[in-house]
Image (cartoon, rainbow, N blue to C red; front, side, top):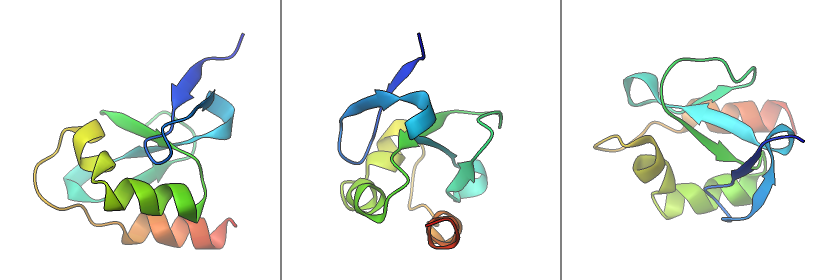
Length: 83
């Protein structure tokens, strides 16, 4: 059985393979495509709707337990390149 995670954008549960892990080294949201980067991670559906909802609700800040604003440009560029 595959592990299940909760999307921080829409708050629905989904298999780990359907979600994208995101980490925040140096206050920058970075997609962890392989799921192996060190540190605390947050899971989100790789869609603009879920990512925008998570940014708007400050869900990444809470899930990753960081203080201050996060740079989302790298994550948004990744979504544009990969559909």
